[in-house]
Image (cartoon, rainbow, N blue to C red; front, side, top):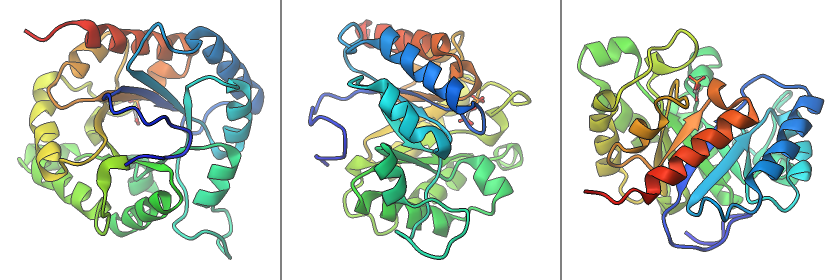
Length: 264
Ligand code: PGA
């Protein structure tokens, strides 16, 4: 797909390095982060091929976009409704987050699936709405520990991906984030490459046309390089470790360096 909002039309594959701030940061903190990130990343020429992105709370999207100025860092929303407008108290639509400066929409994070009743059907409706408005969906999928223990991780995740992409004619604008539920958050167990390689391959096989498959769940400076080296992984989606500018930039630099290492 070409012509997604706010993006060039390069066909060189990029390595994605992004963070969702989840429900953290005041407006002042968000602005400060964005200003410092714009300074630290510059025009990105020091790390060609790495595409950073930041996903603030909806309250801070416009401020973050504005502070980033001409920076190539992309801004996303943590969720958006499937309808364009209407009587949906408390919700925010894709046109609204686009108006605020978002070019990506995170959809189906496991915290939303677990706590807010996000179903595969709703994830699908949100993916379709996001694409309809020319934004990039970042679809989060992942199995619980119980599903993995029963040996059902591949099938579960493939089912989530297929459901999310139902009715999508051209998936080349879609990013998938594989985030095993058991690996997310301060009580999560960080996954190793051996834990994820099979599921990533299964996602690739079931959705070969997507723009990229990212890995997320307790990614940090210490394990980003080995996770980025897993075949089929095109980037990382980071929570806590990138809630400081230094954290995000350090992981983005690790990603840039791992691109420069020729494969054996
Ligand atoms: P974490 O969050 O890096 O803090 O584990 C990841 C995520 O939920 O995407």
